Amino acid sequence: MVAADTHYDALVIGAGFGGIYMLKRLLDQHLRVKVVDAATDVGGTWYWNTYPGAMSDTESYIYRYSWDKEDLLSYEWKEHYIKQPQALAYLHHVVDRHDLRKYMQFNTELLSAQYNEERNVWIVQTSTNETFTCHYLVTALGLLSKQNWPDIKGIKDFKGEMYHTGKWPRSYDFKGKKVGIIGNGSTGVQVITQLGKENQVEKLVSFQRHPQYSVPSGDGPVSEEYREKINRNYDEIWEQVRNSAVAFGFEESDVPCMSVTPEERRKKFQEAWDLGNGFRFMFWTFNDLTVDPAANEEACEFIRSKIRETVKDQEKARKLQPTEYYARRPLCDAGYYEQFNKENFEVVSLKDEPIEAITEKGIRTSKQEYELDVLIFATGFDAVDGNYTRLAIRGRDGESLKDHWSETGPVSYLGVSVNNFPNLMMITGPNGPFTNIPPTLETHVEFISDTIARAEKNNPRNDGTVVKGAVIESTADAEKGWTQICDELSANSLFRKSPSWIFGANIPGKKYSSLFFFGGLKDYRRRLKEVIDGGYVGFKPF
Ligand code: FAD
Ligand code: NA7
Image (tube, rainbow, N blue to C red; front, side, top):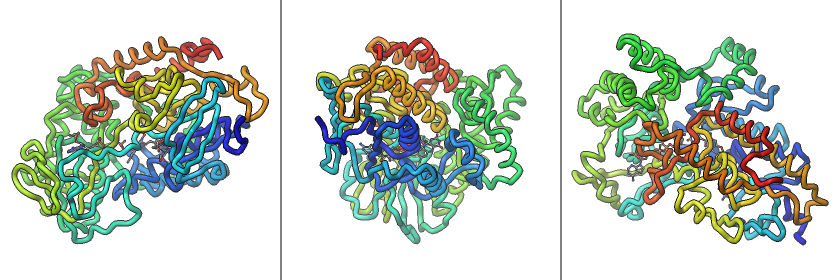
C-alpha cells in the first residue's frame, strides 16, 4: 500500500503550456492529479526565457489555447506577436481563471521515475526528497527547455557576467558594457535586435558560426477591427489551423516555385516579406522551398539581396549572408540586420576566425582577443529528448529511456508513447508534428486524456491506492512503424541536410535522426483518428 497523500492517478511533470491544459483535462475527468515543476511558478518556456526581446514568433491570435472560447474572445492581445511578459501573464491568468494552482507544486524537479510492474505504478523521486507514486506519468517537459551550454575551452575562466538565454536572471543592466553573444538562431536574433533598439550597450559582438536567413516579422499593434474580425471567425480559424501543415494560420501554397516566371517569384516573395512571418515566407509562398534545391536557392537569393540592401558595411553584409540552404526553423525579426549598421555592433564570422578559447577577459579567436563584460549564450537547447535522457526514467525490467533510445535515437509511437514504458504519456515527445506548437500541444493533451478516459472506463479501480488498473502501452512494432514513417517523411527534406536541433545536430555526440513528424498537423490528426477509430491500433489491448 502507498500513502494516499503521495499517490496520484496522474502525475504531470511540467507547468508550461502543455502541463496546464493536461491538468485541466484530467481534473475534468475527476482524477486525482498533481503537477510538479522545477521552476518556482507556472509558465515553462515563458518562465525561464526572460532575455531581452524574448517573444513568440507565432502570431498572438494562435499562440494561445483554443479550448476556452469565452476567454479566447475576451482576453486582450495588443500586438501581432506576444512578448514574453504577456505570454507569462496569459498562462498565469489561465491557471487562476480555472483555479489550477492548488494542484501544483513548484521547486520540485523529477529526478527519477521507475515503473513497478507488479503494482502497475510509477515510483517518482524528486529533488525535494519526496517519493510519489502514480498510475499515469504524463510528461510535459518541453521540447525546447534543456539548455545547451557548449563545451568551449576556458568557459569557466571568464570573470565577467555570463548568462544563458534559457535561464535568464530576473534583472540585468548592460548599460555601458561590452556584450558578446554566441548564437544567432531565433533567440540570438531576438536578443541582438532588442539590445540594438535599447541602445544601452557600449558594444555588441555577435560570434556567429552560421549566418541565418531571417525575414521581417510584421509586428505592430493590432487594431480593434482586426481583433473583432478574428473574434468573429475564431471557429473557422482554429479549424483551418488544425487542417493545415504547419498550423501558423495561413494556407500553405500548392504552387511549385519554378513553375512561375522570375518576376512572379519575386513578387510573391516580396508579398510575404511585406506581410511578415518566417513560416509564411517558407510555406505560403511556394510548396517546394524545403525540398527542391533550385526553389530553395531562389528564396535564399531573395533574402540575401535584402541583407545586402540593408547592411551598409559590405564586410558586415558579407558575413551576415548565408550560403547554405534555407532549411532550418524559419526566423523572423523586427530589425535584426539593421542593427549591424550601428558602429558599435560587430559580427565575427567563426568560419573566418574560430573561437580558440574563452578567457578571463572575453573570447579569443584565431585572430584576436575580444574583451567583454558580459557573455551571452544564445546557444539553444538539447531539444526534444534532452529533458528525458538526463533523467533516470526506467520502464519494464528496469530498462532506461536513455538505453531504449541509444541505438535508434529518440523514438516513440505518435510522439506520445514508448514501448516498454507503460502508462508513460509524453506531450510533444520525439517524432511529434513540426508545427506552431500550441495546436499540437492541444492535440496531444486531448489524445492523452481521451486515452486515459478510455483506459479508466475499461479498467475500473477501487480507489487511488489500488495498485492494478489499466496498462496503456504501444507495441514495439507500432513504435518501429512510426519511426519509419517519420524517417520517410523527412527523407527528401532539405531540413535534413541542414544541421540544426531539428535533427539533433546541435549537440555533440547526439545521434542524427528525425526528431519530428514532417507530415503536418492535418495528416497527423488524421492518423490519430485512424488509431482511435481502429480501437487504438498500435497499442496493446487496454
Ligand atoms: P515548456 O513550456 O518548456 O515547459 C516545460 C516545463 O517542464 C518547464 O517549466 C520545466 O521547468 C519543467 N520541467 C522540465 N523537466 C522537469 C523535471 N525533470 N522536473 C520538473 N519539471 C521539469 N513555439 C511556438 O509554437 N511558437 C513560438 O513562437 C515559440 N517561441 C518560442 C520562443 C522561445 C524563446 C522558446 C524557448 C520556445 C518557443 N516556442 C515557440 C516553443 C515553446 O517551448 C512552446 O511553444 C511551448 O511553450 C511549450 O510548452 P510545454 O508546456 O510543452 O513546455
Ligand atoms: P538554436 O536555433 O539552436 O540556435 C543556437 C545558436 O547557437 C546557433 O546560432 C548555433 O550556431 C549557435 N551555437 C551553438 N553552439 C555553438 C558553439 N559551440 N559555438 C558557436 N555557436 C554555437 O537555438 P535558439 O534558442 O535560437 O532557438 C531554438 C528554438 O527555441 C527556436 O526555434 C524557437 O522556437 C525557440 P549554428 O547555427 O549551429 O552554427
